[in-house]
Image (cartoon, rainbow over the protein chains, first blue to last red):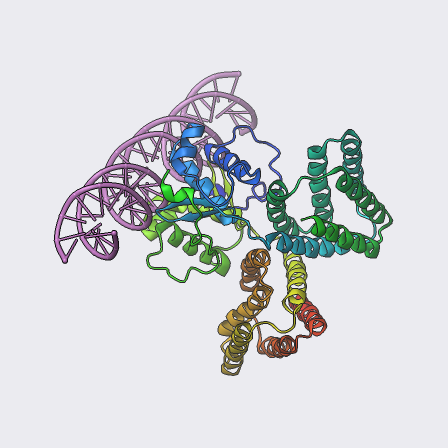
Length: 230
Length: 230
DNA sequence: GCATCCAAGCTTGCATGCAAGCGCCTCCCG
DNA sequence: CGGGAGGCGCTTGCATGCAAGCTTGGATGC
């Protein structure tokens, strides 16, 4: 064991956000590659995926692919059956409702805490305002994909505003699931974009005024609107 | 690719509960071994843990230990620094509050849904009653560890009663964190056991009566009681 | 025709080996 | 005596190889 292990590791503990990604490791590449395939729905329902195939695709050995599969298994995106293979977990029909319920639970809880001491710091407000501006731009330009991306980021920013790292961690898992649901089940139309944008603008206003009750009410109706289309 | 991959895999999708565990793989053993060390607080604050050491301890090679470390990294229990080592992530001081907030959010949401259509199935009720009986036994016998285990299982049963698999998945992560907090911060005393047992009995009664509002109120006060001692 | 058994092909699990990265210690030079 | 550079030991990352397990297809006996 080395000497540095005997002391604290302050740098290592800066968990969220690796701002530097100089050379993605082979395992990381395999993870992102496979995850993207699953989330986008390119690998369809509930089957397939062999370590050897992915390894050959990426030109790496099976070992890092195996690690990537284990990570995806932990995220409940893949079901690794020992000595048999890895199958893409099909989404249960009720899963959309389950995910939305958890989204609402976490968003409500974090919304209250984010506004517990008045309005959040100006940096958070600026980020939210910039995000809403991006949404407007995407909405007027008709770029649905860009809007969807900004939409997800907006809600993640709200959760992060609570400064509850545990909530952020849990919410990340939900984001992946929702991404899959969206890619699998529906195509967002312009009317959805408009209503979502209006909701988000109202939510931003509530945040700016530090009105927790109004924000919670908006989250509730916003999530219920999604429940209708999912 | 084999033929079975081209068809659905109904058996593989039965995610929850591996009732058969004939021979835990080396990777699984490494995972449980290391996770137990972290959760119990045996590996103290924010340091140490080398793949080679763990591999030697268990008499296996480094490969499965590496996989185990990656899983623990994904669970935010370990911080793997590339080419440097793996450090046990110290728990932030605010993390106790964060975890409790998420617990409350998830327990409230799932409680409402579990009782949305009246009382849950008798199998669920039986499991809850049996668990409470175990709690009483442990409480009267003064077995704090057994009570703590049953306590955790009780809340997990309540969450599972919602039949929301996503909630169960998220709650599992919280359970691990709370286990760590408990081992790290406090030792549960008999008065805590008594009040928790009383809370649980009241919650069971609310479930039996299908009274969602009462259950939510109990969850709220129960979690707040924990917040006081953490 | 049908059930059974066996062998081949695929898959993954894991051990091993090598190379590369990082920190620390020491030595050298100014 | 101080500062910098190099070597050494530690660590992990990944490729490779082998063995074991599951599935499946066909051959065999009834």
